[in-house]
Length: 227
Image 1 (cartoon, rainbow, N blue to C red):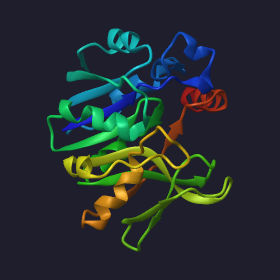
Image 2: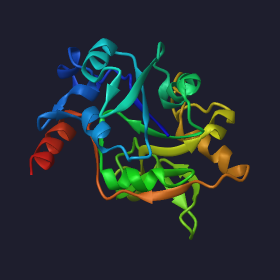
Image 3: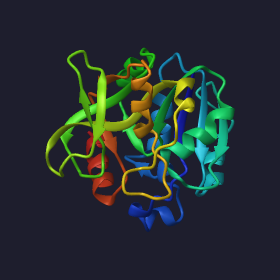
Image 4: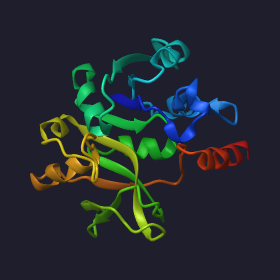
């Protein structure tokens, strides 16, 4: 099973740190988010595809062509056009029918990723206060996703962590723009098309998730991961 990890972004909210270091390699309590995620991949993952862009050579030098005994391949995202654009750019590099998709600048829990990988199609989510920029999920009584929406900032919701178990059916969806954006394509907003044609997507509730996209989040992560 392949794991696709998105590492191409500019990391503008972490400047000036990311002026010289790609966000997935920023040290957090001594180890980067990307290396932590690679360490936590479930046993069923035997190959990794890193989608790179900004400061790609640093990632290639640090991670190399193999990591923890897994082959590592690289896809260069020439135009930073969202998670949907990134995943479509990686289609030709995939070898497995099912795959994980993860964010290179987030920190996950190994058991959560194992549970995610055990489902044919699923999204890793957590309950918490919405930031206003993260999608929330509505589910039915069996835990299947019904729809995505943007909650009010501060409201309690089931939040999308940006980690998915998917298969190649996703590539048959019509591209969907990120809400409010004219040039960024969304990975999750294409998922309702799968649901409409009979491909259920289940929510896996995360026990631990740290997005590390701002200085405030980085400081929080440093404290938590040192404990």
